[in-house]
Image 1 (tube, rainbow, N blue to C red):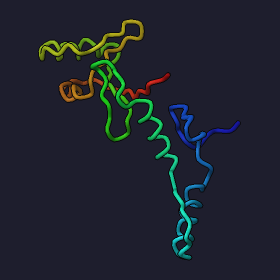
Image 2 (image 1 turned 180 degrees about the horizontal axis):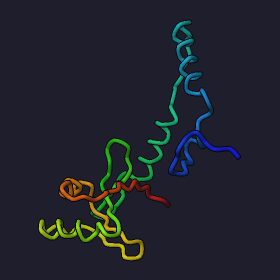
Image 3 (image 1 turned 180 degrees about the vertical axis):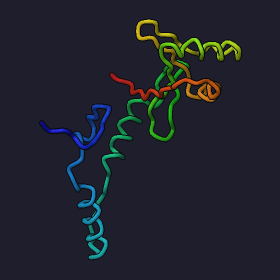
Image 4 (image 1 turned 45 degrees about the vertical axis):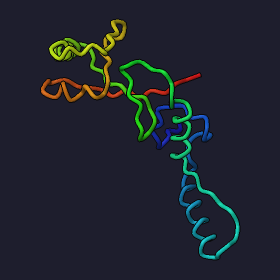
Length: 138
């Protein structure tokens, strides 16, 4: 059984999959060769990370989303924070004291979703907060 050495949590289509072992090093060596030999030809190196980031930007930028979502200008994912199960009432107690209402309660999957800016409000609670990364699909 083959196990990928990379943990990829999204099915990127733009770049055609995962990198070939040592391919980035080979590309950089090729660029170095071109520079060292002063070759007069146009070359461009576009890393797999850059291709993945470009795809997420194209899919996410400017989309209309819920108030619980934060558009990250660093990696272009929409992000939200979540607490689960027994931690939900604890977080809701803090939010109600602050009169914060821009959250979603999902009874089916037992989570509370809210904007990542509100994580700091829960710092004194003994709870785990997860960050959800989201991509807009066609």
